Image 1 (cartoon, rainbow, N blue to C red):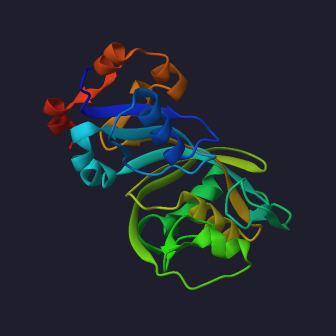
Image 2: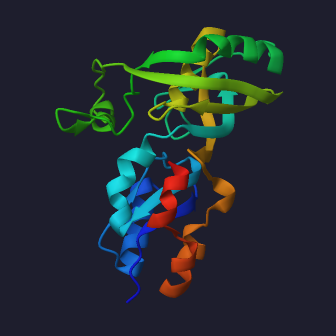
Length: 235
């Protein structure tokens, strides 16, 4: 059997959790060790960096790398999860907006930020995921974490949706930024869609879908994996 050790770039489809992708690849090829380098929410798409075999020992290093996303924020609707998966909790009229006005409003959200995880998230408090507490109607204090946003720019606006691009460190909740922006403008907002296009030096255009990968024999998959001796170029 061909031994696979290295990094596989996946273009995750919407509806899949990051764990779903890992489990699918591990189970299909019966790999012993598969992990990922940075969670994507189920409704997010794009680049998911998988580490296979001996490459799993480098997962923390690659997880710590900066990320780039583009996506859509819908103004006028607030949800309890800050994204399109949640329940709408408030609807307000959207004021006149433009790319220029939106980019002025994002300036305070660029740089070092102290950001607390949303209540609807997988972060655990005393071993219990926050989303389970949120389902029980509970809201608890969450410790903020230091993150950094390098850029947060809108590229287009067609009421009520704005298209944006963001570059940031790991651990940034983009949906929290969408929520905060909506509160600042006064009409509320939530993250409508999100796509990760870059993680460190890895690019989504070099990634494969899960269906494409699992249609390959192991010998072909081996040619798509970035081997251990090439990983130094991506650190």
